[in-house]
Image (cartoon, rainbow, N blue to C red; front, side):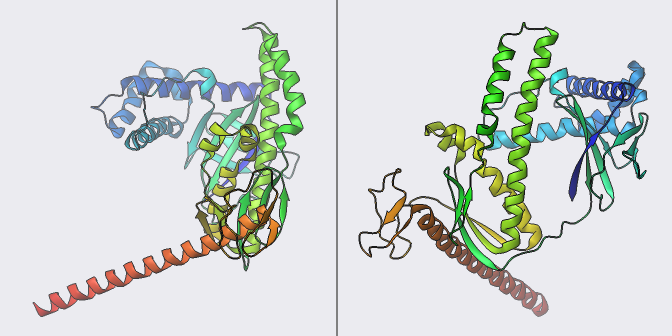
Length: 386
């Protein structure tokens, strides 16, 4: 599955139609939630939509599949709460959605059509809404499964999901990756990738905008404009960070067939570190996530590794240096006298651990397969003897 995101360029009348559709979907979600209790199943709640349409005629102006997706959203949220509860998290009940917390609605399977015009803007036709200008900056591959319309910072977007299969190239090298602050990552080939520090680039602009927001009266139009300005700066930072991580992860997958990466507990690191802001800005968790899903489509392996002592252990002889201070950028082994960058040493250790873990998992999987095969043969012999 591939999801494409395109900007919608709306006139005032078109934007009003989308706002109305979004508001009706919000109210539908809240009505379904108010009716929900332990006695209702997903199908029973969906049938309740017919009763709602009698009471609220404006719902007839919205495509039926869009309203059905609100029922899907409701039970998806319930499922998420149930999973969190099973994991031991404290969870409450689902809340009714206010206007500021409801930003999307979805056309599923039908009710939409993309039209290429060879003009400045192409067209997206949405059932019961009409034609909307859309900027298709890339080709949409595969059959469209659904389209989600989203409002973000006074802009509208269409996220188009298709059934196309992503084809990625896989490299030939094997590397270990050490995450850091001075360098974003350092690999076992000796390559350092500079930390772009996206938040720092916009910090001054963001600080000015936030100070301006704090001086505005609550409920005023000027405060609303100031809030949108702050949100747009945050959006710039998030987009720049996401673009960097996408490009870096794609490069690493294209060059390597095996990647060992630290499995960091980001939450713990941020709770105890004076570098919490830089850790949050780095988004190492997102890099790991992107590497895993891109590796799956490319056919290469990404192995998570416990980062404990990867910096302190000598990558050549295995001797541990417990007195290595965080300010020391060089690792010096007291036994074999090797002197290398601490980040490079860590990356080498991560690669070694990753390869060891991968071989152990492969052996375990092979053993399970052999046992299953033997069990099936035994059952077959038993059946034949009868």
